[in-house]
Image (cartoon, rainbow, N blue to C red; front, side, top):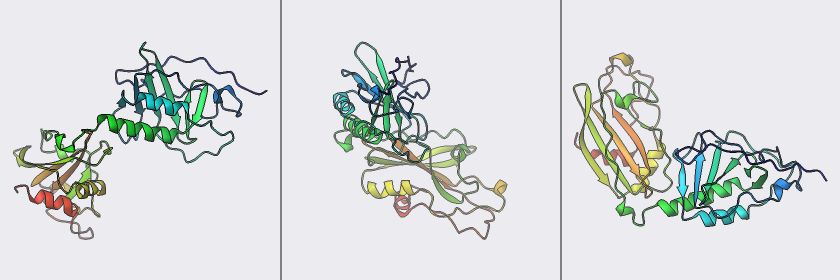
Length: 301
């Protein structure tokens, strides 16, 4: 009988976040130990039961950049791990390019078990064991995380404070296109796991070489339309200045904070910039979507 002996577990350095110090690939994934269907990697358990905490870690291009942690839903997660189907030998791979993902289980005695995901092959693996169902397991984890961390009543969710703009150029950091006359971009941050529960609009005006907060507005109505406008981002091609170095300071800068029932927040920044001489072959402007325009019209100019 052809088989590959199960490897001995390797120690994994786990940081304060509960995630491995660097992305970890278990020996049992990606075809290394799953040569044939009767290999021991297809019969042994992925992990032992009895964990008290589970942390999902994604190394790059993550929807939610921070590790996701659950405690109450761990027994259901373990039952799902116990019933993951065996991988099929000689299966076809999908498209590559998925982020490296680990699932870390912690037990009462402090021991940790680390699983790695191969979304290209649809596999979950521990050292010496491999199963199918990577996507289904991540969807289950996301549901358990939302259940544990979402506020029972969205009305209880408080928006975060408006960010501090220490310098006039602060909102230009990371702008996608220089010289935007009126533009909007989405700051790097989490894609919200749930629809927003509250939206806060913050308006800033120049004061010397600084931007100071002038007004704040919180809304809890028409949130689906506002969330759609946030996902849309910049509408059309931005207008550009003929000489970007001659660009004047912004008349106003608006920052919109979208907070969901789990208290995760995504951000949109809108610049209102005068332009001395527009480039004629560019469109006349890139205003925000109508729902955001309506929201911002309620702020003092």
